[in-house]
Length: 206
Image (tube, rainbow, N blue to C red; front, side):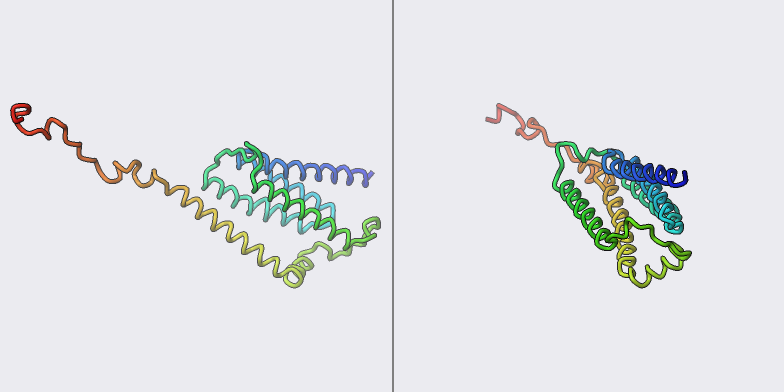
């Protein structure tokens, strides 16, 4: 009965993860996409719990679904929640490149896991008491994966700075300079009329 419940939770979390990931890239409203990303991170936390990685699951909820998503929502609110239709008029080169990169990353992950695991996927692994703990994760971050950890922090910092710069450029438009050029440069003097340009006397002068 316990294994059956584990399988039910695993299947539900897996479908929730896939469905929320598709919703992130298909919603037109960026706020809804951000909320779908929160659901995706929550479903990943459930999968981590099933893998006996309690610390990673807690960090997934507290750090990513909490702090990072607050930053995402702040950037979206700063830029303005403009509804867009990215798939209208056919996919562009950016959409095709994104799908191709995602497919290549999926193939790489499947090949790497298959080569690393080999025939051990059909066997039950022995999990010790230190697996998934803060000490073991910190040791791996600061030894084997230190470069990737620092690059990720730099990328997040660049994304935050870029969001602020884009927001400031979006707000400094023509409206901030005073509207039309006539308003910005003052009122123009009226053009002289034709009658005022004629010499006195009109036809008699000819």
